[in-house]
Image (spheres, rainbow, N blue to C red):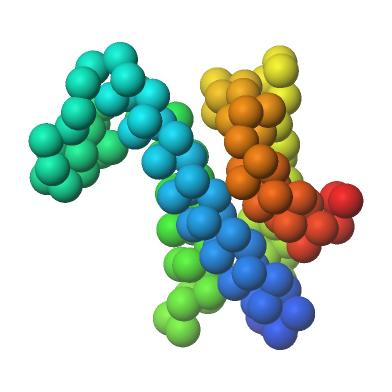
Length: 135
């Protein structure tokens, strides 16, 4: 039996999820940059900022979102052999990871703080929940 390819509906939903995750990642990066600069002073340009994002523990928790985006994009690529069950598993993974919690993984706890503090983060969270059938 040949594995079922990703359906057009799942492909479209995952494309939208990826877009929302990228938008959320940008908002969270901006938030963390402001917090970092408040504690450590201004970051001296895009090169040092990129180095911080890639290697400083202050920003490490955000790699969770970038990893999700990469996994989704890889599954949706033309060369991918991802199947419908793979797509459903990715959606379930996003639902779990992007659930803000007071008690949860480091990411979920920090994400919960961001959701509590930023209306823009809340708006994207609600859009993500609606897209994934959670809201």
